[in-house]
Length: 348
Ligand SMILES: [Zn+2]
Image 1 (cartoon, rainbow, N blue to C red):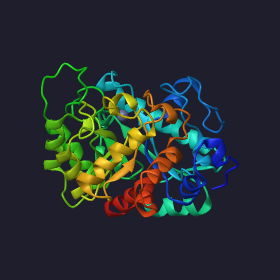
Image 2 (cartoon, rainbow, N blue to C red; image 1 turned 30 degrees about the vertical axis):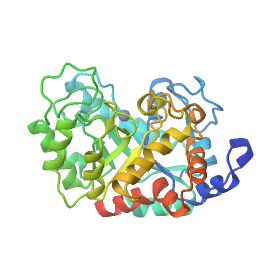
Image 3 (cartoon, helix red, strand yellow; image 1 turned 90 degrees about the horizontal axis):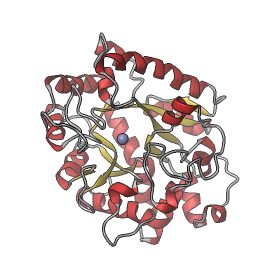
Image 4 (cartoon, helix red, strand yellow; image 1 turned 90 degrees about the vertical axis):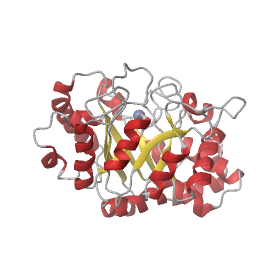
């Protein structure tokens, strides 16, 4: 990947930048399609530090991803969590068309990528791989024929529930009027349908009871995933996964993508910068070994990243922090993309 930005400009070591530019760097959750959809944000332009100074939106664009060697990302289609069930599926179809138009407008700099082999080809060609991902699985609840819609495997993953309880199950968010903590019969159905289509079942955002219900119904031969999360072993929070959850995902051959969101991750007296993210990664390594962790920034997902990661250059800063903390390069490569690619190949 070409870059004109120096390590000095990014405020990191040359070794950290070189490692990022050489590795597979795959961010498992980027929500930049939200500003594209809502106010026509141009992903091809370099937006400097971002429109809101790094708060909530404006975190990334293709040039800033290229500068730190992001070779691929799960670009999420996130629908409004409060929209009625009935309209969701038609909105999803419209959004899919707009999403494809966004990629088509990149003039070959981005490509929709639905298999590991297609990713490898994109990487070899120096093209950013866009892995379509759905957040808020109930957007599929109105599909007339779910298996048929999933059959082209356009989606890489589906986050079963988002910020509200749905026909599928319960969210971990406390801002909900909880009637039932379990995965519903339809929730079990979607897990099975995703397994059949070899699309990742994403357990970010899901309430603990629904999480374990999904694990029970999921095909144990296939990897699970949590694309963007913190861990409660560092700081207990409704948005974070506990050790048993980390373990079961890692045992399935899946990965846990660590989010860059200070509000879920900062512990009292702990660091407020990229070291915070490093602590969560290290906890996952402690619980599940170095094959468990990945990255899932949640950039442009209305989160506030740690203070030094708000400019969108968080990946290379994280790598710099991991090097300072004594991590070896092979383990860092696993976190950046190696673990996810291994898991994806097992799934597909
Ligand atoms: Zn999310």
